Length: 334
Image (cartoon, rainbow, N blue to C red; front, side, top):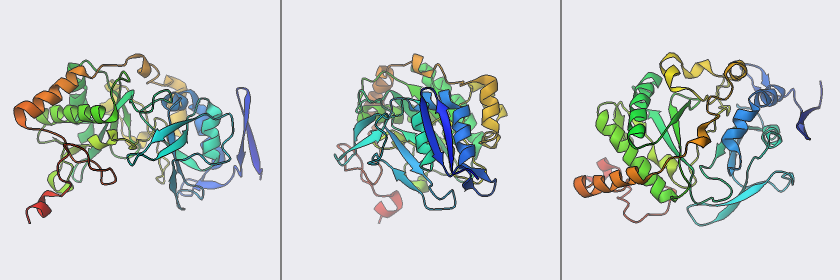
């Protein structure tokens, strides 16, 4: 049993220690399997992470062991892996790794990282997102097929605003739609645009979609989790492995295949074959950034004509100007 696996990645040689250590007991997948998986989808995985401050979701003892999110770079980060300084909602700063080559991805995998959580910004400007990310989250009583129906309608909403969305599985039951945008707006403005998009979708599908923050108000509908665009909220990157027994991955998709796929189709074993056959189906995503002016104009109309202002922030955020009370409706009545 080898104690070290050395991978030659371009001009870089990266070591994977204890490569036969089992990470997914139910399937027997090892650190070697994880490293080889990320090598097989390397360009796609790096495309989703390149130059982005990235939080690592680590499982050093396998998926059945203790896990944690590593937001600050460790002291032993190799000098060849760049970093960027981000600011949390509290105002405290931190330096996070910014993968610029595949070796950085494999270095993190060796540390037990399964899921990469990149910020929607680049190292050059960590206060202005260049991606607007929409999380279509199935609530109890709904499933992936409901998320797909909402996604098709969302595509039309985005196109109406002059934007182009790129869908992928979350790795769980839901769908993510990433929208490349020009980095000209801050987190507050991009989150406001996300709310406006969610409300436009909700108007089209009122029985199927909701932007209600409080679970008691959502019902059996797809929740547009607009707070995924709040500062310090991140989503699993494309090709990340999720910590479930079958090692599913967050799979980039083409719009035309949404109706014929299911999240269980994409895992550590099946994705390399798909990638070898199709390549990264989101490879051109960064070439189509859009502007948010039409969406923010809609947000203004929502507030002016319908009294639809801001929605609650996540509980760990400081109170924001114009934000409604963070009290669930059933408690507020009493």
